[in-house]
Image (cartoon, rainbow, N blue to C red; front, side):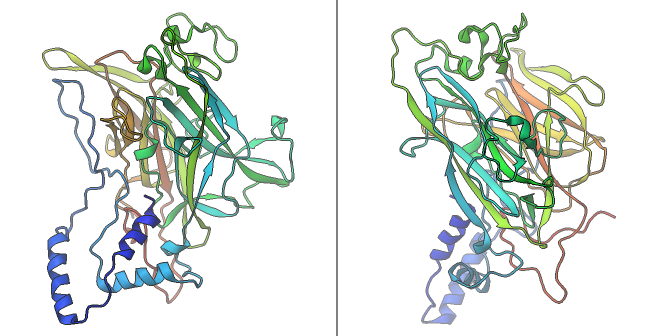
Length: 484
């Protein structure tokens, strides 16, 4: 359920005025005493279980990073009434952005044709996307079939999807054929030639929050940002693997080279000896080995994605997108640190890989989340002095339904720090740490970390006016003062 739907659902349960107000007030006071959390505490945001390390190993330390969207209830009756009025109003909302100013629309990608064991890794230009000078608040996607029914990961494995803006000459209609006319509009770093996307997830997409807390937004469509004579469009990349009838589902999703029977990568370069598996072996058009005699019809699937946004205004603060890759060895020390922590009588191993990368521009971290593949336990981001900035833990499914597939990562917890409390400076060297279970060998693993960083400044408030109601999930509206 989307945030706005959650609020409307709560509002719809609001009772009519009670005929005996004094009795109603008494019951409300009792109810508030039962449900209100202790003063100074935060509600638990992540309802999903975390994966445990291999048996016998020490438990992972957990930190106060919060997961899925949570709606804080227990508002005063006056605020509740005001919410109902806002939701039912037909007039223009206040300039300080109430919930009914948030817009949402769901789109479908072009059809993706998959047969058992096949791989699709295509780029789609000029996809359907909101236009104008906007503030993106969330982007959520999942794989569905022709009837709109969610497809489970054990049938179609979503290796990843990414979305990214780019510029083309105004009125251009042949940019699909002439890629030389395209100008990428990348995020703020830190990778120079890769990882330019604004959003990107994989198997965890259904149970991972992408909500940007108020008063922040990812600014898009700024007419002054586009090169002269150009306009902004959006592209989508979907990497999906059909695992129906394959001999080894996990090995196919991990792109083990021997099951794909390839010797060259998608560029035609020979795959080096000793490369057991990974992205170079499961590119578009490759085929994973099937069980003898398995025959199923080809089917079409789609990436269904929902975008939420606001019209841009001076009451919003822009954020910068940074993506860290634990395998990046090009920055700072030029190498990564790899270790295997053995614990317990069986010498169970948790594989730990870490690397350092320089953050070009500092500010306040308002959101963080990691991306890992099967076997991942969790990942963390640390400051130059070793302080923890954010930790994101993997959630594994336990059943067969879409969103709860056993053996697959179905969610990553997200960090929503208390506003103004987690800061980084310009040029600070940050360390990303990725933990994987080595109970069994894994190939094609990934360790990315996304953060959103805002500049050190407060939300501007018009003279004589107070900030409007805040509808951020789960971060409160009031900003902390910037560090001195």
